[in-house]
Length: 300
Image 1 (cartoon, one colour):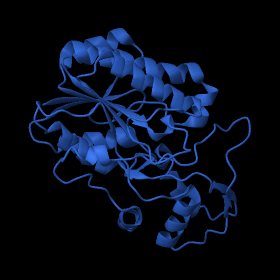
Image 2 (cartoon, rainbow, N blue to C red):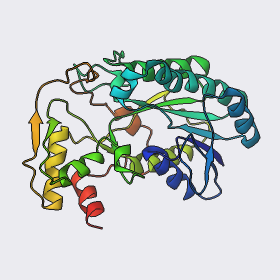
Image 3 (cartoon, rainbow, N blue to C red):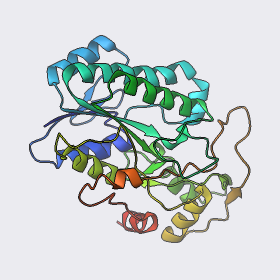
Image 4 (tube, rainbow, N blue to C red):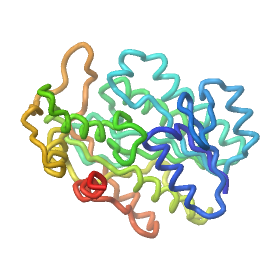
């Protein structure tokens, strides 16, 4: 089996790479835009000619498309670049996958929903509140319109796990906030309920998904999410408990994001995963428990 992973140097892409490396008889092409490192192949995904050449040379069976602009506030400041990466690039990759006979997994987000009526089934109408969510929704529509037989849209919530840098994850970076005992105060979101999900679990699930018989139908849109609800402030309290440090410098903020530099955030985009569970992939969703995983990870 031959697998291309885009965004292979980031939080999710790194986990995908590790997961598929552990799968026997699997050859991986790990693509990265700016970061370098062993096994990483540099490629600008907006360069269509270069992408066509690389993909046609490798001839992948599966493409796991993790590369994206994932930061809502950054997306608002650079809308054209965000649309190009989050919507136009996936459309091109889906078209290329169709011509090569490859499966493509487009990693999307719970932010395609407005957060007013959770839990959300895969079939429910999307209504993103910010540009990030809009571009990911546009990417979904683009890839599904090109090929409805070899495309899987996998929506996931906020992610955590082993990261090249804590800043690669909106969850991991909270560990740095909790450990900052310099006297600086942080106003921390206590408004939006999130369902932090471990990237290692997603990698394991996708490996098992790729092992399904080719004649077994897979829904076009799947949701993969942990079920434990936390605000970012509540996550900070857990980190402070595990690390045994004070958390008085972290101030809960129960108001919705506001200000010119802050993108709107949905209140609760809990993803309904029943359709994913119905696939009967051996091992179920295989979800980690948040505090249990972090306790083991931070104590190493």
